[in-house]
Length: 64
Image (cartoon, rainbow, N blue to C red; front, side):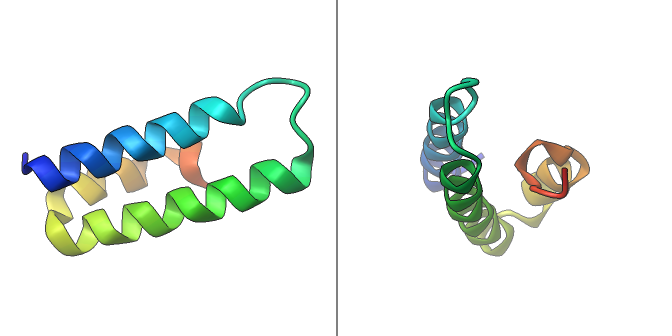
């Protein structure tokens, strides 16, 4: 895995962690998850195989 991908994954995980609490407004969570999806799209350009693994995991999607 490339360093850039690792940094992007760490940033995405950090963002997700900040909005996992129960006191987070839904709109704030949705905005952060949009940012996470944007990070995942960058990863898709760099390493499509890693993106495929992420895409199989529904945690970054806001379809709930």
